[in-house]
Image (cartoon, rainbow, N blue to C red; front, side, top):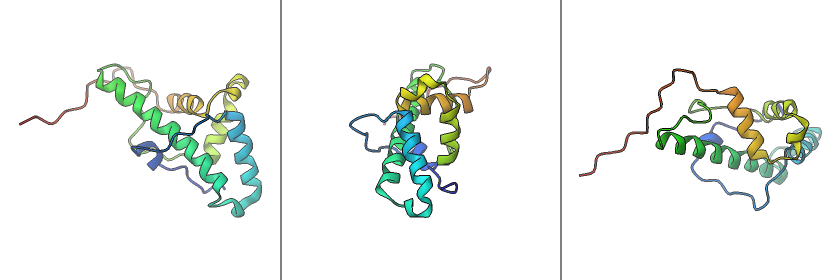
Length: 136
């Protein structure tokens, strides 16, 4: 399981399905641990796909928040690079470092907290809205 990547594409993709009911951090960690116990038999399973989709959805929402802040010329919540690679094992470790109260929270909120901590914006970082193509 350690070699499985949640993937940079999840932080860069434009549209991913959003789950009807948000998954808690506790559920995500427990389900991922159960998959880890299955070893290579879990690779490609629907359960793994569901967990990856949950994180991908959180990543899309996270990137949208950052983009929206930049478009409004506001300081974004964090400044992650364009490409981020985060293994499921790394994310599980980060989730375990969160305060116990966070375990009842949604994966998308915890994911944002993890990314904010990993990629804070620098003090002197300039906030400029993205360039728009000239209209003709």
